[in-house]
Length: 418
Image (cartoon, rainbow, N blue to C red; front, side):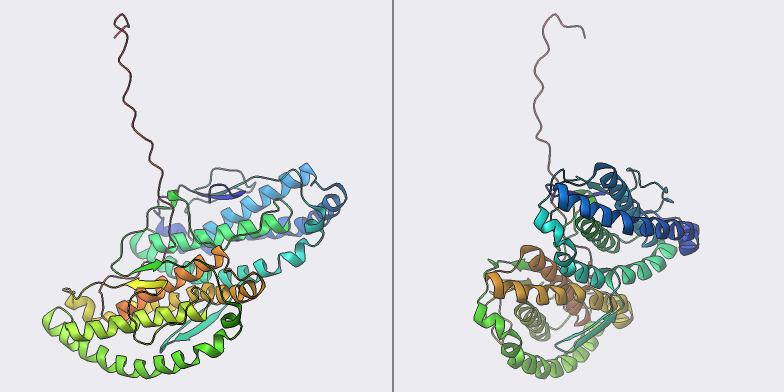
């Protein structure tokens, strides 16, 4: 991700002022006004830049600088409003904000792709609408969730969390950072700052903080090759699995009720019910991966391990009785956020369907975005079915930080001063 022309820079410590959080929308009004005026100006400068680039095959430098500052400023305002950063941002789009973007403006661009830039950007704009503000509702195997968009949902829950803890939860901050990075990439592409198409890959830089370990982990061994024949009939082929998921789900409801009473009494889940529920969660993931183009083979009906997109499940272990007692109420935010993250899964499935028919492969960014949504779905379902009492982590994966190798210092010369 570090070789892309639009790079996310995260130096935020996640600490938040309760006072400014409570009045965040009110405090942001001057920025809304200024951003609206700047956007109005950018509409005309973008048209001018389009003509210049189509004629000269290179953008005008003053307009490039103007658009780069606009993208950076819009990112700062978005981070402030979505609680992905705490300080009141400046009005000039200058570097140095706790959640920032670095942009490498291209000196030359293809006249052909520049001429059709808006049409080429339509899929990216569609994905952007889903991530930042589109509503979604989803149902898979009996689990249902509804939301109003990924970043909006994150900002809503983050507001309450910041007021309670004076800190933005790690996962929520990173989801907002992903949405803002993708927004900046889309704007940079649309405004001819860069010819590089936006990537839907949710992987964040190491500065966003290492993803904590979770007992429910997703493993991806997919080579991204897709059969055009099974791709074309993918929805039809999934019908038997949807029927089986529905029937299995009826038994799961009864099993969860029995498991809840058992775990509440003994402090740990019953092993046979744990295996049954873990297999169901794994099977849900297999079906979702097949339906939304995240994997290619037709899955089995038993939820056994070995599918290219699989879930590692923990063994039955002790669980907190208090968490078990209030499991449904504690899980409500995660259930709602699942609906928001399903926008990534839906977009990955739609985009991947067209891409697989055209080139026989699933784009890596869409595959990774869908896999992230499946991982969170699996963690939420495992939490809801008492497979684990570890709360789901919503944040995208982050790159492993590069460690600087330690080099033994050379011995000082004998006559060197101390």
